[in-house]
Length: 178
Ligand SMILES: C[S@@+](CC[C@H](N)C(=O)[O-])C[C@H]1O[C@@H](n2cnc3c(N)ncnc32)[C@H](O)[C@@H]1O
Image (cartoon, rainbow, N blue to C red; front, side):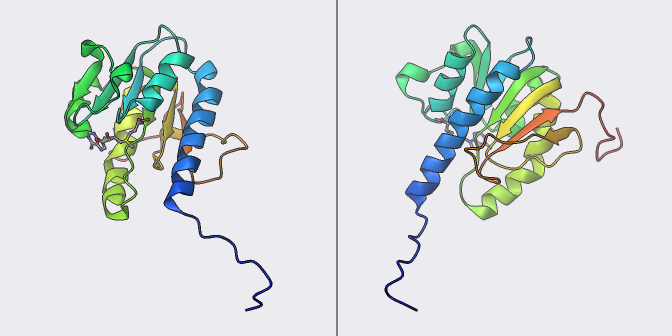
């Protein structure tokens, strides 16, 4: 290899984190003004509470229900008790099916393919069932589901970094034929 040609620097985990956070901010900023006027917002993966804080800033007055295994948010970003649901998302969201959410933001990717491959088996259907027709989903993992229409990303977000969907107003038959 010609040593006078600088090689492309390796993409690091820091680059990946910056890309994910930038994508979250740019997508939430673009999507929030267009979500349905009614219905709560669902935050799957409260974590430190950074995206929760961004959502409540961009959607003042909107109810945001946040889910996580355990509370680990910065104290400035802890939801009110009635809007914080702790436990395994697959179990705790069951009683919220039909909640008719205007927006679901799912940030529960781990960066471990063996875990994320399992998550994408159940997350798309869970998200689809939480949304209102016309409701939007923003996710760090792909949500391949017949009810969810993929939407274009902001120019700043590379394809495959983050994902945006809208619940179809006319649903195609689901996988169970229901
Ligand atoms: C990347 S962090 C979320 C960061 C957050 N969006 C923020 O901006 O601070 C992912 C969170 O999802 C939670 N999580 C992942 N899978 C989960 C599951 N199956 N059930 C409950 N919580 C889960 C983890 O505990 C973790 O706090």
